[in-house]
Length: 169
Image (cartoon, rainbow, N blue to C red; front, side):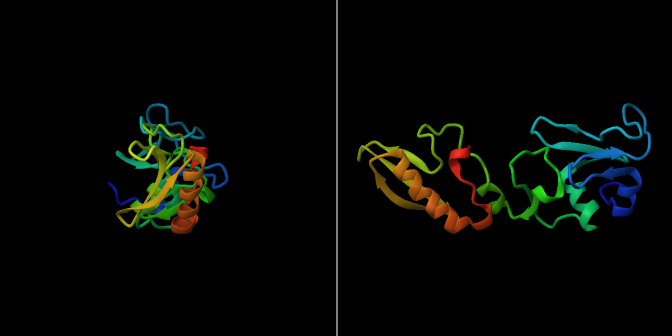
């Protein structure tokens, strides 16, 4: 079958619980894939992968296929940012740009706030936001918190449903 998995064949092979996001095998297969056991394993990137007929699939994409009958046209975003939280209410279609709006602040961020950096020459905190491939300068501020407030307001307006408050990482 390759990557041409149909919703019918998926449902023959696996049961999906849309409230928990867990896939379990309907049929026993070679190895550890026994009927009733949880399907797949979490890879190094944190995503659950399930192998069906020799092809590997991401569980969140299988969840979409199982519920909606088609694979998503774009990416799928995990609203809570947990890559193995595959219940259907936690998944939404997203473009690449929309999906990145929901990410955590960069690991090399030293201000503690997304969109905030120290402006050495001005000796103030600077707030910037990226929108449509352009960096927009939001201003210089006395505190990191004030700069973060400016970023948060701009992000909420620009990103809509994909906005996620940055203090939560």
